Image 1 (cartoon, rainbow, N blue to C red):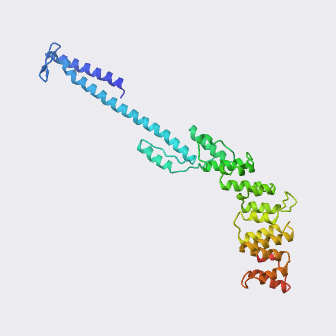
Image 2: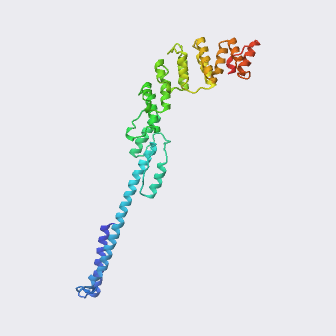
Image 3: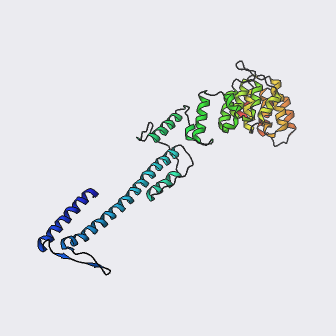
Length: 337
């Protein structure tokens, strides 16, 4: 009930009660009352009857004012918590590790859920009608499309997934050169640096490749190997340089064989044999690739000599290939690796 309407209604009630009492007792009837031994002047009875009604009015108004103020602050807390919940939704979309404190129990429950949740909208072009949330959704959509966006205003950590994705987008869109990414390695995660090095290795000179070889990956290595003595983007590489590049990553037996296959296209046979001889001496994992290289180049006597120098139970598939070869059967060595 509005206070103004209630006051008007209370005054009308008091006037009615005063009039009603005066009609029965008359206006001349008076009565003197006393409180704690103190006698008050004689007052009309109609007026004395209105005193409790007036006191009730004052108390009821005070009661309504109390709960009105209480309701005002409750509504204010709900509004503030609603705004905090919107911030929690924004932080969840931005994958920020933030904690939000709520004053109302219901929003506190929602806040606990939001603070431990990461969100990703399923619907493209989703609009909520809230300016802050829609702005973040627009940024997420642009990141997903591979575009570069401005994330500085959100104060995200360097390892935030959105920051990393933005860096990848920047590199892919050539907004920053591959060498610039590699030269500022402290600002980028390992996978971004490896991707940048792989693209960089496609046309960079050998000295530049060796400068950033710490970001070597298998894909990058095979890109470099494909350039060795090739007609396009040719790269002249010594065995020592190749050994240095290979040491940057862990290679398996099959990887070494694949390397030999790749180098068989353009590398001179003498250099190729020497390379895998050096690899086999330093790494047992490369021994199979060495045998493959010898047989692929038809160095049968050399391969037979090497097989005799190792255990009789080692390299059995190459022994089988040699036996078939000596019996006059010609098979492709690739069938045995």
